[in-house]
Length: 331
Image 1 (cartoon, rainbow, N blue to C red):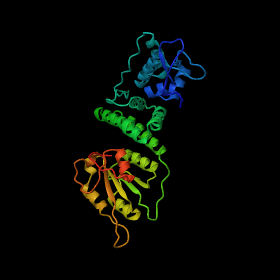
Image 2: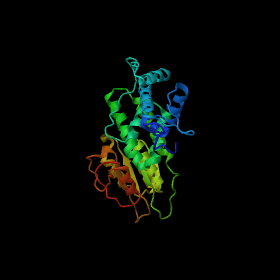
Image 3: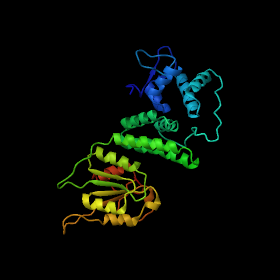
């Protein structure tokens, strides 16, 4: 990563504020490698070079890049898009978007008021630019930490892609799949090795989706956060059958069980009560797990004695033993 990526530099002899390659890449949702490739192959690069090996991009340079990104996202080949982007900077009209009935071309995502990183990440995902998506996710985690990167960058972008999919029929399914894969990869990269437990130490936290539930990303974020805090955790992932979940509780003796339900149809209070009632230990000293409910599926469901932290941050505090009181909402 460019060591000056977050800053701007004033070029000698220029009235424009210039950005580094890293800053431009994050703004546009393009990997630095892609920017260098466009410069080398198509001449889409900074008009003025800084001293040494560092590049500085003027507002005009960035405008050309924005046109390049827009045209390539519309299905125009990169070489043609580069010619049009350069011509557009000089006032020439850009080519029209190809008209195809089954086009999967990019459209504006309903992001609303979000961090700038979300816009760059969404643009990269719509273009199916996997290297850029990977770089932007890694940069978000490095700059903001896991919790903020998840809550303020990953989740808003995932929700925007999901809304676009829902409102566009079968379009953008590939965008959601690509983004979800790379979010999962980013979360696993910041997951530390599993923490052992034994003796008198509290049992691990058990993470599981309810039967039929396939949405695991929130649990993956929680898993990564707990590992970073040194909390023993066991991740069971998607659609865990009720019998298997009960058997795991009795074998592991967990301090807590997190049940994730994205949809209301899978959020069964009866299942939660059944898990909460599972016992282990010697006769006369039986123990039971604390059940923590996560996900929007549990909204409005009565579950006395069970906790519902409103965010990833609150869930981490609660499960790390800091005694944060639960509130309405979901992880």
